[in-house]
Structure formats: C-alpha cells, structure tokens
Image (tube, rainbow over all chains, first blue to last red; front, side):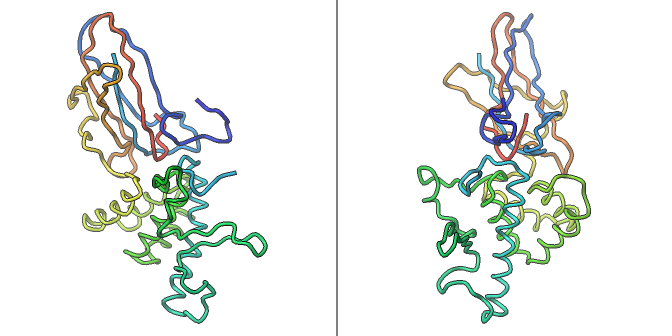
Length: 55
Length: 221
C-alpha cells in the first residue's frame, strides 16, 4: 500500500500484510511470516511487527 | 522534504542524515576534550548540539544526544526507530560514548564503505559491528541496550524457537476489538533471514483475518 513511490513510510501499517481465510475443514493451520521477498528499497531486512488473528 | 521529528523515513535516508548529524557531534566532542581552544560552539551548548543556520538565523537547533521531545507531536518521544534520523544519531553517540570513536569509525569505514554491497542503513552498520568486532556477550548486551533505548531491536524475540513446524505454538484467535497480538523481531542470529511460524485452531466455515500490525524499524512483511 504505497501512497507515493518516493515516500515509503516505515510506519505502523503501510508495509503490513493481511489476508482473509475461511478453512475448508476444522484443524490446526500455520501462519508463516518473513521479510517480504519483494520488499521496498526504503524498508529493512529486519524490523518489528505484531501478529494478530481475528475471527 | 523531511523533518527531524519523523520516524517513518526511508532507512537509507535516516542513515545518511544520521551519520551527517553524528559526525560533527563526534568531532566537537573530541575538540571539547582535547583542543577546547578550537571549539566554536556557543558557551553553554553541548558539543552534540546541532545548529543549522539560514543566513544569520538558527533554522535548526537541537541537542542530538538529548533531543527535546517538545518538538514531537503531543510531546511523545518521536526520536525512535531506525527510521528516525535523530535516533540514528543518538545511537551512534551512545556507541561512541561507550566504545570510543574508533569502534564506530572502523565499522563505518571498513565494513560499510568497502566491505558490503548492502545499502547504507543502520541495519548494515549493525551487521558491520558484529562482523568487525565479534562482540562477546557483555559487549553485545551493552550494544543492544544502546539500540533498545531507541526502540531498535536487532535481536531474537521471545518466540524465536518458532522457525519450523515442529517447534510451533498456538496463537489464540481473538474477537474483534479485544485482540491479543504478539510482537516479533525479524532477526535470527546474525544477518540470516527470520521465519516465524505460528499455529492457530481454525474452525470450518468461519472467517479469519490474519494480519501483521504495528510495524516498526523498517519491517516489511
């Protein structure tokens, strides 16, 4: 989500990710989080984030 | 256009501006200690005080070692994260005060300037510090404390044993509005990419929103 390609904000949500998921069956599912393979040059290889899952 | 109070800047910008803010502070600190007669800093000002003039007017006047949070929105400390140029300056000053200018300069000159193709950022400086100095646990803790004080966390998080399926744990699914999240640092040992695996119990047909939030220090998930 970039509002300006010359001004990438390393803020709380611009470089975040989200997805909606509806399980086809009940069970244990896994979420994998890594640094984006196509990360913006203005961003980092490291950094801090929080993960949350909401129903 | 960028401002000293911003903390969501391009990491390459914060490094270049931060190094530019640090270097005169380092030189003036040395002069204050070794050759005070050469110092032109106004009386009463710390050598770490940065003044940028427009003509005869001080356009910017800030002590980089102790930036005044009154400049920040709502007075909250905005000089935090690797995406803040003032935080970068403050971290470099902190390292200089603890380990000396040679340690800072050696990392810059011998790793960043000619030892890596990575972009010039605080992250790369950290990599260089680890590579050049191979710090023991005591130095590593001291260096991390300097970074942590500015809310920069180049270290493993408390969930770091989550890099494979066999080591997973479950995160509670929360209701909208009352959500417990957990904070991770994308850092595993030195330099290697981090992979966080989190499990949760999903129930058939229900809709789950999975999201990374509260990103800082240039995290791009």
